Length: 213
Image (tube, rainbow, N blue to C red):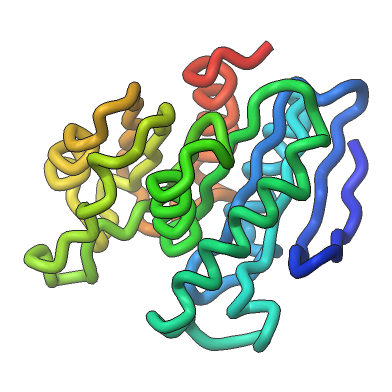
């Protein structure tokens, strides 16, 4: 396995290349407060790469502009355009499927990108989808879910304040394409990647659910 920094045409991040020809490509975007070096993204990338999947961890456009701070709602469309550009940039890394997604905000924007433009990816991997702001269940972020036509793997921590297990289950039922819900007990929004075993479980589910290999 090798890891290299990547910078081209507005796409920035790191690319994990497995030994041998990749079976698939996964493009992952970070959460609102993070960047492409977020622990959860690195651990998932390592586990997937061990299974012969190339993984691109990307910085969203707002993060490329400034090293810290949350995204502004006015920049969400640009972030989605950045995700689409990353999918185009990394599609050629494998003749297999391309899966796009990310953690929290990154996953949400990836899901909206695929809802708007299904051809950019063959599936979605969403970890800790921020279904609503903590304590604000009336602010559900579900309007685009019925427009998703690609398979979706959702990974959720059972104590995540951004959505309960029941709330996520109901939201996922709105997606017309095949879905799988991996609900992890005793972990919250960050999924505790160095303690919970979540990255290994996620990698195993990715290969099985998306029929890779």
